Image (tube, rainbow, N blue to C red; front, side):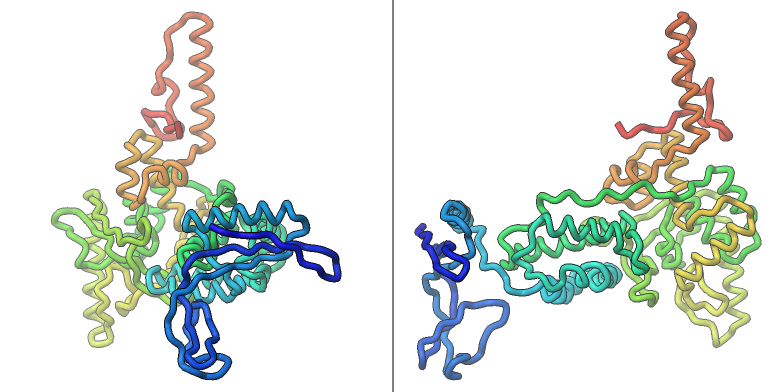
Length: 441
């Protein structure tokens, strides 16, 4: 592998550039004027100089890089460049800007990723990324610039000019990391500038997690609501909002007492659309969960009521096959369902929480009662039990106080030699739990 450092004189004095071989590369050579064009993102059909015919060739290529202030800096860069070429990691830096690349990347990603994901990525690029670094050259991005982007988003990244939530900053990081990974695979970047950048860590959310007694109060308060069974299904299986609204009768087996979540009703650019449930690496994940006897009876009664509505609407009924619909059979908009839940919570006089809080409460309750994490993870549809432990296990104030008393009792018995207390001697107010909250270790 050959390379050289040579000085260049300019108005600002002497600088240095490096020249090195990058091996045999495909190109197009004009038959008429012998002009050469290296292959890039677009393939030319005629010579840009004379309009002549172009033929495919493979020729030796040299690469030039300039702007080094000292000879030592140029020699260091040359050594690294030669090493990248020898390790087959070299690629010609792309001249595209960040905005241009993201436009191309999103068009390609739409072929393999979910529509809802692409819709979110487009919004992130349009609102958070392009206005700040969209005009920068993709190949010139460095970790400090990306860290500065995250810092700017944290201080004034929201649409109103205020701080952006740490969770949203992490979404920006996730999208850019995946985009830059593809840029490396496509040859636009020699390496991912985010490889050595630790992504933002979302702060613990302020979601209110109901205790089992509060979930019971809520379900009792909505017992006469036509969507009460939908709330019960989420509360007793931990399914997601989209999974409940996308559930079809063909996926409900009341005899066996099981439901299968095969699709989810999500929003793509605020338009309801069906997609496969969340899964690892984009692979469809269909899961079947068992139901308790009371939920089975509630679903059977809900089906009877839906049949009555179908007869009442006659030919105007929309046969979507969904379990939860409007009175005329049409699907329920996810945002409408969320707002309906919020109104019911207020009417019940309970602490405000999000609809997703029912899923949180379900997982937290099972984990706090000692149900194996693997079992809970499977019911929730998580790709990894670690996700279950990290996100859905919450320790309430009452549980924390009970643990404090338990620890004090243990230390006190060690000092005076009395009997070591058991967890059930302390208990978990207000429910009678028999196991302490599970730790993360």
